[in-house]
Length: 512
Ligand code: GLU
Image (cartoon, rainbow, N blue to C red):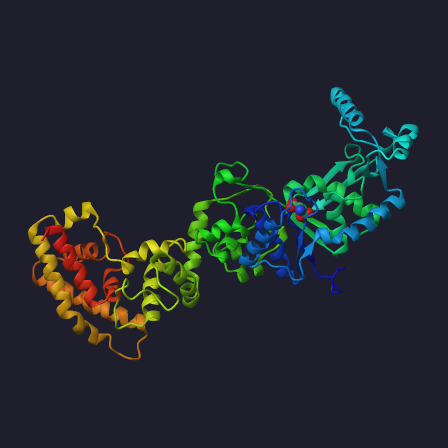
């Protein structure tokens, strides 16, 4: 029943026939946003009436996806199959009122009438009088199969003002008496959907534009029952980058696949919100938290032209959300992924495989290295690739870089000398970072600044630029020419491991 205070009641009504894909997730989100923005109620109704196509597995996956996105129902989930009594009651009401009837017209007759209309270039709309009288009564008496049709008005038009698409009008002579239930009384989509919306007191129906064609028929049922008609807001289609309707061909479209790809739910929600909706220019900012989106959301800013799913934009947006995630939360999300990739039990990473600065606690070290990668990631799965050298020493070095940076014996000698300088000056640099009041990351920054300065003066005193010392070191420590800031890498690897890796690299390239 409608809320006492007349607040909107909306619902998301998926049919559990497959994964929750991007389009349905956007529908759920827009309903949820509207309810949150208006202080209304958002409900979830699983439309599992079609027993042949619905599966429990799909229901479970849809609910799991909605939970992950944070779009769960404000009231207990409704399952359409458990509402059969209500559907039956309304069906009998329509039959008793004469607004629905059993139709015995056999399929071959229907087909012939349809074909005849097609030949004449006319629209075929079945009407009650087209198969009645004696033949119909005979079939009824013989218990022949039938369907239950809604008795639709024949003249005029049915019209509604869609909150997105504007006025939509359909001539009644194109509609005809449509089927609302099978002969055994089991109801069909257009009927159950309306009955549930009436019974659940739904005030606004926000769903994909593919349902516009059902709406006129559904409105006729509301009218026949004397029920208040909800407002409709149909959402524009979502297209792939090639401007074709979004489908599996475009890669990931199931919501849980995005989770596996390392997308944050807040980023996906932000991205989906902008598929067909945009905040006003005054408030325009593409990267928004859920609360910011809720505050700005309104149905009248939904656009009717198709939205384009831009995968690159999602990746970018996810990177922005990763950088906005509070440190503790990010740590909790990334740590299990690193553990999965690099091993380590619940107590921490395996101390035999992870060599790290022993001056730091596990937590400080992990926060530190996660912090080094954060700026460079687009998904949670990127952390492992950027930070792998913290978990295992490089097995090989970028060949081109070896040639360029360590291609001559004197360059290898210089690298060895660099290792010695680092070893000798490590503790001196530490003294500047030794203020116990400093946060661990601030101490790291100070040590890095002091070490950089020391290496710079030492290199320059020998007639070299800092880069001449730094680039081969980066190669030695990470195996690559690009990495998080070098001195921070050294700090988190620790003195012993830093020196050991540089020496190992020198040995490897000189073949000692
Ligand atoms: N079960 C329908 C679907 O998944 C619901 C349509 C509606 O929201 O009315 O498309």
